[in-house]
Image (tube, rainbow, N blue to C red; front, side):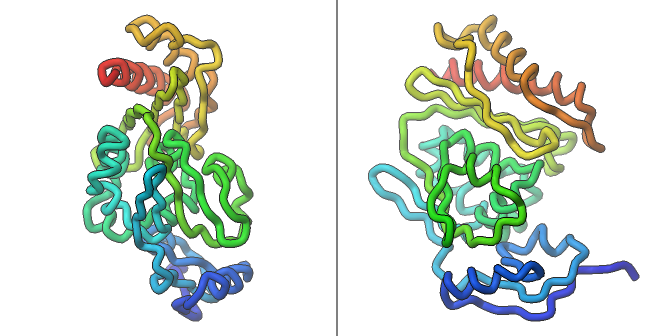
Length: 267
C-alpha cells in the first residue's frame, strides 16, 4: 500500500494567534476545506482547523465586500451581490469546479492560498483587483500575495473585493466540463483601462495590461483580435497532459478575443 495523508494531531484553533503560532512549524498545516490536502501523500504534524474563528461570513459595506477565508465557493457562486458586481463572472468562474458537493466544502482561502496553476478562483479575483488580509503580514494586493514564496507561514483571514464600476468577463477552456481548465482568462475594464488575467498556463495566473493601448479607441473585431494576439505573444505558456504550449497559445488568442467582444457587448 502506498503512502497516504497522515495526521498526527488535530486542533480546532480558538484564536488567530493560536492558529498562527501552530502554523509556524513546517510540518503543521491549515486544513481549509481539506479537499486538495487529502490528495497529498505526506505526514502532517498538526492539522489546524479554522472553523471556530468566524471566517465563514461575507460582509458588505458601501465600498467593498469582505469575504472570510472559510467561505465556501458555493456561497460565492450563489451570491446575488457578486452576480451583479461581476455580471455573472463569479458564477462562471466556479461552476465548473468538480461539482456542487465539492464547492460546498472548498473554501476561498484554500483556493487562493494554494496559488494553484489550475485555479479559476485566482484568475478571477486577480481581475477584480482583490486584496487579501494575512494575520501577521497584514493587508496586501492579491497579486503581491500570489508572488510570495510558497514557504510563507501565515494565516489568510479574509479577501477584500472593491465595489467599483468594473466590467468583467470570465472564460475558460476545458476538455470536459468538470476537468481542470486548459486555460483561463478574465478580462476587466474600468475607466477605459483593461486588465487581462491568464491562468492555467499551466502555471499560476498572471496579470497583463493593455500596454500598447490597442483597445483605447474602443473594442472592435480588429482591435479585439490584435489585443488577443498581443496577450498571447506575451504570456509564458507551458505544456502538460491537458495541452501543449502551442495549443494553449491558440486557445489564449480565442478566449481573449471572445472576452473582449463580450465586454464590448456589455458596454
